[in-house]
Length: 298
Image (cartoon, rainbow, N blue to C red; front, side, top):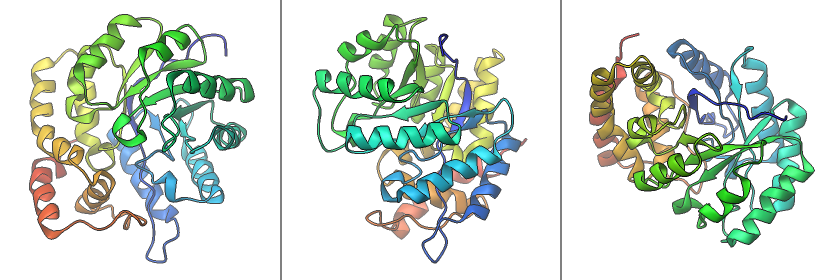
């Protein structure tokens, strides 16, 4: 892996459907992925936070990775989430993903431990040394309690197997700084969904997108419109998506995503504890915001 792989297009951060018995519902996952493929996604990102990896056993995570690998066709991008609280476990999960056939993994800082930048650098170096994979860094300090700072990005900017950073801090200023500082060295990957169009403008070719689980046609339409140079249409789409995206960012993200899947006729079950159900008011608010999105043409 001497040259950096380029990620592009809409990459759904896949939900993990659960049946009434609490087990993973692979039939529902297959139906959902067929819908995404028809909408025009460019690949798949299983076992991220939207996929509730934190609630899954290693056997379940393996089963999801194998299912998605078998579903994928040639040319579709595969990125596995292999997060865990400790470096040892991250290496184990990453090695498992590599053995299954994933060349690229998405890695946030280990949660709960709040590592320093020096500790994080050693963490990522340990993963790179142990497993021959590409890494997409994942900055989501609100969830992980630790940030991926410029010290760390400076350190890895010219490492071929560190492809870029999924930026989910919600700060457009930080995204612009990353795009400017690391142009041609680290790929800026959109992870702040309610400002996705701004990310595209600043050079994000790929969008690892949780909301595409329940609005895949609209997200892919936004991506295509921007790429084709139709900025007027791209802006109009973003305006339509913004309210629903903003509600998602306000809290109970995964629960709302799964409710949105049900609204579009592709139910995926409930979230696992400790994630609880939405209130009727929360459902009504998100349902109203989804109204102009559900019957998207195409």
